[in-house]
Length: 243
Image 1 (spheres, rainbow, N blue to C red):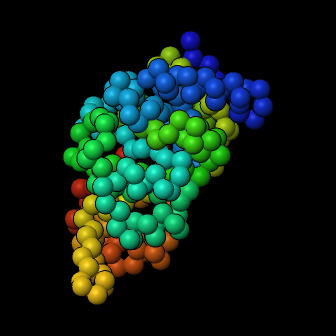
Image 2 (cartoon, helix red, strand yellow):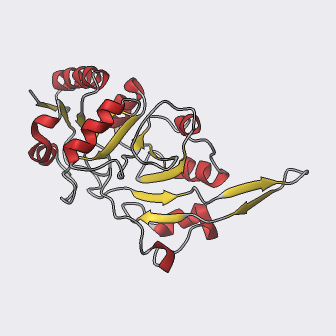
Image 3 (cartoon, rainbow, N blue to C red):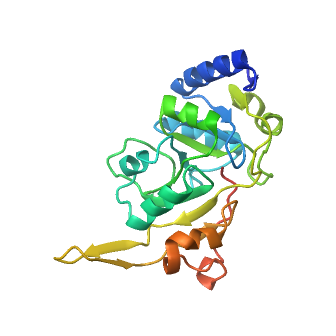
C-alpha cells in the first residue's frame, strides 16, 4: 500500500527515505520532489522498474525517461563522450533545471526504452532528491503525472495521478520552480584536436524543450553553439513534461 511521507518531519523523512531505498531495490517506484516538478522514479539500471514507470504514466518505450544523478562526476560515467561545452554547462547550471542529452556509454547494462543510444542527464537542485540519489545511484525519473496531464507540483497531485502504482511518496512541499527543466541535445557537438592540442568544435546544441532555465542564461556559456529555439529545425522538437 502506498503512503505519503512528510519530509519536513524528521521521523517521516528517515522512514520515507529508508523505504524508498528498499522499494527501489525491489524494482518498485518512488515519487520524489525536485527543484522543477515532482518526479516518478526507479533504479535506472532496473529494466523492470523502467517498464513499471512507463506503464504508470501511460507511456511507451518510445518515450524513455531522463536519468537524474547525484553528482556531476556521474555524467562522465554514464556518457560515452562529454564535450567541453557540456562540462561547462554542468559546472555552471548543475545542480539545477538543465537536462542534457548525450551519447550513452554503450557498455552500460540498462534499458531505458528506445533511446537511440542517448541518455538525458540532470542533477536536480533539491536536497531530498540529491540525498536519495547519493544513496541509491542514478534514477530514471519522469514527471509525476499521467501522459498528457500537467506535471505535478505537489506530492498530493502526484498521488492523485499515480495512486497505488507508486509504493513510496516523499513529500517535500510545493515544487520551488513549478516548471520542468530545459532540455538541450548535445549529441550533434563534436571536437577535434590538432597536433598542438588546439580544439575545433563543430555542430550545434539543439533546444529540445524550453523550461525553467532560459536560453539567454544558457547562451552565456554555450555561445553560438546554441541554436535559436525558434529556428525551423527545432519546431518539430518533442514537447515533454519530464522533471
